Image 1 (cartoon, rainbow, N blue to C red):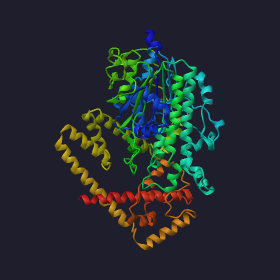
Image 2: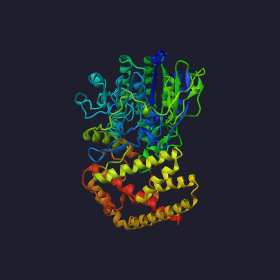
Image 3: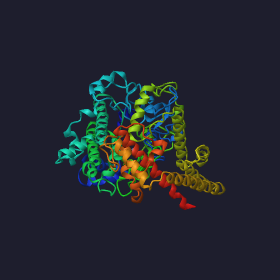
Image 4: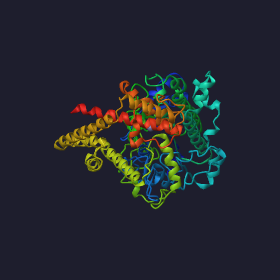
Length: 612
Ligand SMILES: [Zn+2]
């Protein structure tokens, strides 16, 4: 190994969903001094994301330089061969080498913290790996928080790193003030209301999680040898999904109280990351090449969607197609802009920085523009996957325990990324595989391989004829391929199916007799008997156990005023799908919400009839 390579140090910092549109006003106001300095002393610009904009796929493309159909990570969850059910996506599904495997087999030391997905950890012989499940708190007592198997490698660091974790219950009121200055000067009643608000729990969890990741990263930077250090923070994405809607300027559909309390959370999150960045840069030192990046942006302005599609991975609609890219360090251009960067370029660029060849099977390019002087020539090999060596990838037969899968799955449900797994295991599995196929098809489309996408989408649309999204994507493929006869037939089918659905929805609405005063009265009485404290017009259930992400649908999807009074009081118990199963207050709240959603869905579907 060349002496140059052995001395080289590169730090990659991942800020999921960080967006220049949020950052620039903060920098202008002097609120992100560390990032401002990094930009001044480096090169920065937009980085284009890939479709579909789903973070586990994207961060794997960043780490491998390959599109999803080559690397194999296709979504948030995957089939679990041990239970026959599903589990959150693991590192076991990745079928190609990541940058850390290549560096390890090239004799370089690597620390990877929190990368998504990196659980279970890969056993790198020259490095440390801390997985994306390391920081997830369980229970309410920090003292009863075992280290989850498969989250830390090597084992000698388990005790040290376990102690560095931060539990949400350890956060004090003073810690929270930085994110919630609106709480100051509030009366007791409002404070009590805030304390019970599930968004508060969400906030605590987000802050604690990224603090744990940061603790592990900074400890490793100081105590372990490294040539390559990668640390991934998911918090800005979570701040975005939970609190972007309260970010100023206030939107019409945002409640005044919510705005007053939560309007600063997103900004607080960015400022916190700037402070953490300051520490990372100080520990890295001037001899280290630093890359700070996000996998996609997040609409912060008038482009914020007013509703989240009720389909798997729906929250991704809030993502913007450009993320951030900044590079700084020895030999990197100062105070310049870069154009045309893509997530796929990161892995080849890193290999080139270390003087290693890039794989011809990688989909990205080396970002030569970042260099002040003419960089070394690019070397190429057919594929790193064909180069034997001590890479540390999982053996093909490795498995993880079903209990671990289940706990991690619940967390994804709470964040709103995936739907509650259906009680029917076979159906849940079928739907998971369907979504993975759909995401695979979109990855092919994004890569310009429409023929492959057509095969998948035709099969999906035949199997699930009322999932119009499959039809729409298929239509886009036919159009790209110039298959006009297919396209014409498909569009006719789509229109027919939507009208059929609209007629069924209209009939279902009619059978509910929502405008019959008798029906309205009976429903009102029934709701009052279920819920002594919550009137049928209250828009939000403080007792709901669902995370705030799921509440977004209720606060953001306004019912049309002409229908809302009837919809909230209609005789919805006839809809068996949302019949009340328990008389508890929280169930009443939940059931009322699902009834509202169901009504709203019917109304929306019925509107399509005007196409006819
Ligand atoms: Zn996101």
